[in-house]
Amino acid sequence: VAPLVGVVEAHLAARRRYDPEPYPGRAVLFRAAAHLDPEPADATLGWHHRVRGGVAVEVVPGDHYSMLAPPNVKVLAERLAALLASPG
Image (tube, rainbow, N blue to C red; front, side, top):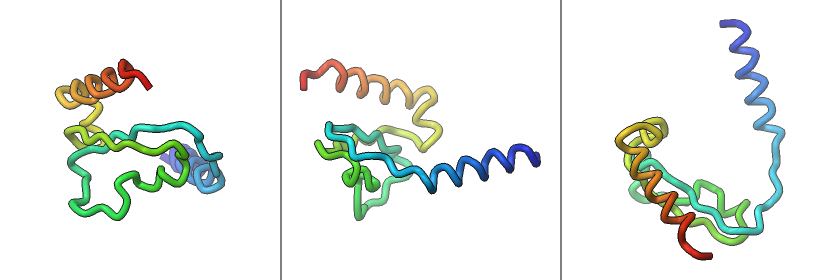
């Protein structure tokens, strides 16, 4: 357990120091429906500060983990495939 604590602490320290450059393009943020605030102050969770071309928000079923597991991941995959197939 002790080595794992050191890894977690190192990851947290790295996250605090990391300051990414703004991204000039557009992005899509997939949000888990189970964690949505009914009246969010910022639906992009702050990503609009980093993404200059705009952030589209796609809500998918599940929570942070279950959106990546069946059956919810099928919806996520379909939405992602549609976005990748659409021009521009």
